[in-house]
Image (cartoon, rainbow, N blue to C red; front, side, top):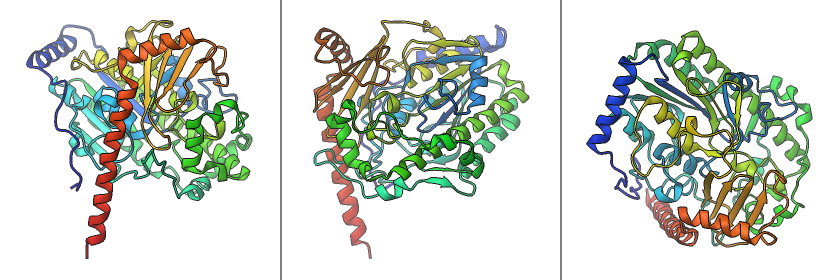
Amino acid sequence: MSKFPEASSQEEYPMHRRDFLFGSFHILLRTTDTPPGPLHFVVLKSDEHNPRYSSVYGHPFVRTPHMERLARMGTVFENHYTPSPLCRPARSAWMSGRYVHTIQCYNNCTVFSHNHRTYAQVLRAQGVHTVHIGKTDAYRPAHQLGFSEMLHPIDRPPPGDTYISRQPLDIRDDSTTRAEGFGVRPDPFATDDVIIDAAVRWLTEVAPKIPGPWTLDVNINAPHFPHYVTQELWDLYPQGADLSPLGPGEASAQHPYAQDLRTHFRTETFTEAQIRGLRRGYLGCVTAADRQLGRLLDAIEATGLHRTTVVAYTSDHGEMLGKFGLWWKSSLYEDAARTPLIVAGPGFAAGTRVQTPTTLLDLQAAMFHALGARRPRGWKGHPLQLLPARDARRTVFLEYHGHGTRASAFAIRRGPWKLIYYAAAPHQLFNLEADPEEQKNLADTLPDRKRELERELRRICDPERENQRAEAFLQRELAAIRAHDRSEQELP
């Protein structure tokens, strides 16, 4: 049992009895009075997959044939974003259906647990069987998330990440270990194999026996660092041992938050050989994730479940992979903030691509829509099935409050425009159609556009207030960490 207290015990958006009755009645209608529909929903979430490193999103040599296979059967969402480019906040937003700042799950520290309702609890109340396999990394332990079945859960044990101080900025002491995290290892994907084995077994042996609707949330580690691969995958990508063409000398790399991240992770100590090795290993890890997707698709097709099942592949956040001298996530630049999203099955047209910006919260809304279930009031996102292919007015919102930067940051994407609003540094405005690599900041040259997007941001939240709330919560976390450390030292 965790020694750490809950941060809150209230649920802002309780489900009322009428919501339960509506959802149950809707599902009953779908299962008895209508032809078989999308009564099942499977999500495979990888970890840290930058979509640009896949053949589906245009990479010239990374091999992801099973993502291509899913794309041929369904829809590719070209501009899909994480709610927050960090594991625990992103996965907590997915679990709760709400923005990170509203649930106050800002970082990867686990000294506090939160009592927000999960999508599994909401769906179970409406008669849906919910299954989770693999990594949870959410705002409370796996066994408290409310799933009908929880298989091979992987929690982040307390206290989680403790390098969370923003002012003064914490400096990590594991840069050497991280820099050497690549190369050939025996059985590097053993944990992911166990997870997919369990998913295939569940689809084959259990799913056919469940008479009603169900969801299956499968979570693997690849292509998250360290980038260890098999010899075969290492040999597959010799050309992957390159350097990013946009390094730490670029203008966007000089932004104070980018400089903070390089300082925090000490990435400027990485050698050229280490950078090349990390990039090469990452490509092999992407192909490994693709192969796990293939195993899931094979099982779904072999059992005939594809006729009534929506299947989605996505990730919790991206990976900078050395661009602007940055690594991993923690940035609102595109490489860390964007993730793949490919969805096939009833409600999703085969072989299509959607330009409208979306987030992981829209995928959760799509799951409820496919199942005919009702979401609680206040949950964010819009069903993907109901979005037009190109909506130049749709706005999506991202935020980051975690480790490695001096303060919070927020982003608004609408049409080709993206505003990154920094609580403690100059803002950035990019036209992603003209400048997809975010090299030219237009904030000073297009002040009217910047103000327009800032108004959209302020309709969602007050960024200055949310930065203050995040900092106050962070100070509570740091105090709890210090108290825990003292108690550990006092043990005989």
